[in-house]
Length: 474
Image 1 (spheres, rainbow, N blue to C red):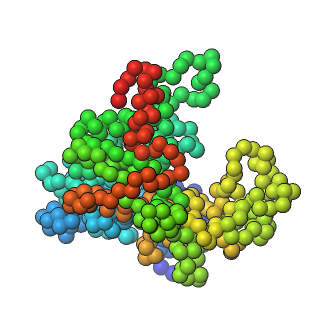
Image 2 (image 1 turned 180 degrees about the vertical axis):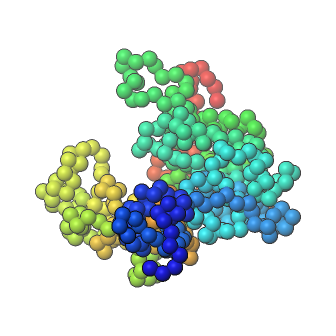
Image 3 (image 1 turned 90 degrees about the vertical axis):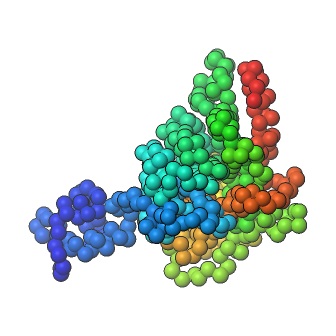
């Protein structure tokens, strides 16, 4: 071994890991090292190289770069502050519409490395709960009097997800949501955008477990009514003078080659309700719009060399070799279905994610944070493998040159959690047009998602009936 020799403890300090974790890396040959007796000896250069190429060590907070401070901006473009930034899908979208992102807020270290790698000039802070509005302004290079055009954020959605325990604001992640609302009010942006999962439309302000509902249990109180969490959000913003509109949007209607549905809440400080997003595509060419973009459209010109992906277990590959583009487990012979799914075969639900090959001629299903989990497989239409990182990026509309940091699993997670860039651009276009006084095109009776009564008008009407039993008017 050549170069500067260091100990396990030295490497642990450099990598922000425990000594035992470093020993494991040495045993797994992930860091070049030699064992002398019972002691591991490492090269400092190898440790530094490992740190630069893996998600270890902490990415420090940073202020906006000196050439981007308030004295030099002059606000030639409307400015935005981003919270729960992730891999910056939403931010790339609003930037395409003409906004300038000054600050990102993110706690996940792999995401923080992605932000610094691609946007080294912007300010970066960690947990929103650790910063006051004044401190956020200072980090972004803004004075107390500088106007903020837009605040955007997708607070952790697991607290409201229909696949989770749905604890809403009782969950720690839900409490972060409340902090985000507080910062919006304190920062007083002209516009605020909140992105979240469909489950927020029906999440209660206070969760009561299902086994404690129904016959033999007390009736639900007003805080336990479905939709109470979103009602609270709307009321908080309304009380501060913001007009609020929202809807559930399928990203495929905005050019994304993916059927991904997300709630977008738009608040305007002038008290008016903004129209819904303007679609650029439709499923069957309705309203004279182009058809949805397909998976093939997204990856057609993607080089096949140097793909990065996880692998399916060999047992699962046996079944995939029986399936072609657009097929899933139900296209197998019945005896093979039972063999492939085991006990899951007899469980309820459509199980559409089991042994699922994407179709070339359709948008991709919703990308998940791991493409090879048994119940949510995302297999290539023809090749016997999951979708690659490069294909994930194309489906979420990240530029090919956008670097996603961290391990392979961390890269999948970042991309899978992101807001599609096309949906983000639709959000940015809506607000930019409102700023400029441009008339916003409307599409009466446009089918924004596969669900009914998900826009603010229909949803509020349903909530009014729901709350009527408590003699509460909204």
